[in-house]
Length: 146
Image (tube, rainbow, N blue to C red):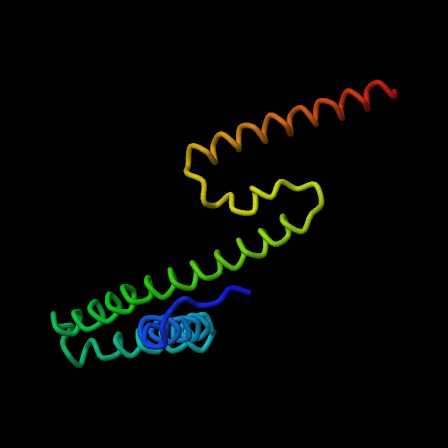
């Protein structure tokens, strides 16, 4: 198990903020994906629509919904990205563990996500060629048995 190289002050500073943000982002993502959140959003929109005649469909009335939805969307982008980054990292770590645990697997594939686009494309072409060759061998064997 790796040990932390941070001092106690550093640990409480940025890591504390990161931990709090992560918990907040996860809780917000869980809540916003819940049917209750959707119902609340629909209720806000219905309330806004119903109040249209009261405010004579004024520019301010329109600005309220536009501003509110823009702010919520802007903030949700960051929360969703944080959650997606964490989920992707967790999946990558799980896959890396499986690659490292498999006998005969190439250990360097455990960190394949660190390759650049050109390297990934080259590997993709290599694996596609290997898959096509394997398919060719299988079909040849099947046809020779007949």
